[in-house]
Image (tube, each protein chain N blue to C red):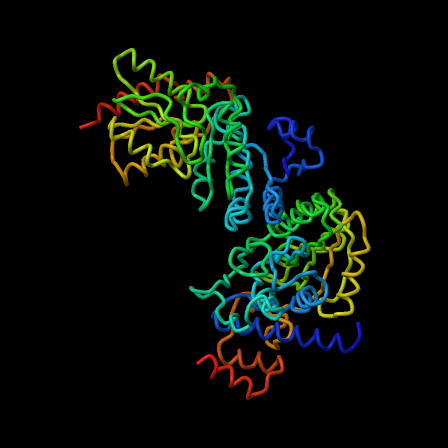
Length: 290
Length: 286
């Protein structure tokens, strides 16, 4: 069953509604109720996908996600769209840069943010088969395909994907920032700096093995996320490395501020979510190696 | 319902009340007031109304119950134990570190608990989800939920009320335990949620008002709910908070407090235990 909260046209659950009208339920503008309804559905053995904007799925309905869904570890899949700053003109109230933090702190929650179209399909399929609650974070802005190439490992929840091998610095990126990480690696390569690029689509459970293996080679990390640098990818990677293999970490992301209205490219520039910023931080991380 | 049947139910409800008191006393904390007020409702649900099997608590086609006012878990646990989902003796472990009887209902650990609840307003929505899933799957099970009157101050209750009426969940019955008291005072003083009957009616529900302690009225209400098609039913059940324990009746301070030994003894006597039975309890407890 699929549930939405009066955003089916924007989240695109309207496509499912058209195909399967008997299994689509609009819950109206009442996200808290929707999330607990999903828990009730899941308790009967049917898997519900629940969709709304990230701000409302993770923010408004946080407590319902925690208490109705996650505490009983129910099989609810949350498809949260329009996450991050790339919502654009709607501005700060809708630009959720806190959802990674909110979802990843909940025990037993799996948190995934795909980098492109093919990875999104794979993530949704994998979430359906995964036992337990899953938070899927999607952006609004179009992105180039970066995970469909030869040599990219098949999608697996909890396993990061090595998109480019390198020796000098590891760029760990998630979601929208993955293609910018690849751009940054190109720029660095032109300067003789070889960056490894990891698409860490699953923020939780985090792929500690892959991270440690990579930094043992490179000795420095840059994280890149369309999220507050507090509580998201930068935090998760820092925590993991601090405990397992401490190396210099630089974080690219929204630097603890609210967004604003504007064209997406302007916003990305304003908040430093660019390949140029990744390059700058990569060099800073390398400079901090002993 | 004949008199003999009514007597059996009343005796069962009384044992549920004793279980509530045993649990809360041994825990040294908990919520006796709103537990005692729903003893007849839960007794009727679990012993007469619901299609359930303690030997198969996860049966796919069973009727479901959600205690939306999850803090009154002592009542649910005492009822489940009486019904045979787990030993009555276990009620004394309520809220203790090695017990599965959590302070609020935990569906992962406790046989017979259909939904984890405790945060007010969430349970009725989960009950809506169960009812919707049942209808969608073509199953004929029914879903019951008990709400607090104070709980209905939560906005989510009315989101759920809208939802249930919109999707014509006639397999759903929500019972409002109208005991009139919440932590900070009477519901009218704190944030008046009444009149529940008119509000649920305005939201599109079939509404029945009853005395929460009268088995004839309870039976009639559930029977009437079964006949209604296309609408969920709300049963507004006027109750006495703390019912059955003299000093707890209509006394707001017993919303969330446990009696010490002297008052525990008084409560057990109120519930009909003989002096010997009460003494025996202390010997048992060691």
